Length: 216
Image: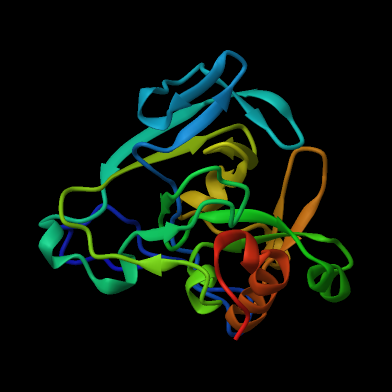
């Protein structure tokens, strides 16, 4: 999203293929996030190339790349648009409060998504949880380490007890698949939507009472 005289580690974004959609900013996993492996939950920062993770459609998949970087240096100058998002427990299947990047994409199930796209499963960015009034954004007070996980193709990784996070080339700053669709290895496609629709789907998909919120 931003390339501040080569001081931050993010790649420049590609142009969005959908009017009103967010730019394809990189997502990734904030250090400390737990991910599911065949042997149990492990901190994402402990992973290495060749490790296997449990995925939504692909079962156990082998990591082909693991990137490690800092969100912004100096952290005190991190733009508000990139501040980590605090996702309340239970919002997206996560068992406890978790941190995500604005571009981190979660899989949700929504009746509204099915009406719009024909598929109840939809991939939405963490930023849409802010727009929906579900999550909060907090300024980082110390360095934030980002882990970028890469597979042979995009995968949905079980994280923090049940949240499904998209990992793969399209979430690492690469252009999205043609027609603005993300595709998993078994051929399911997830449409890229405009920001207003993403927020509406977030509100539809998430049981606000379960996370201590009420509808406006």
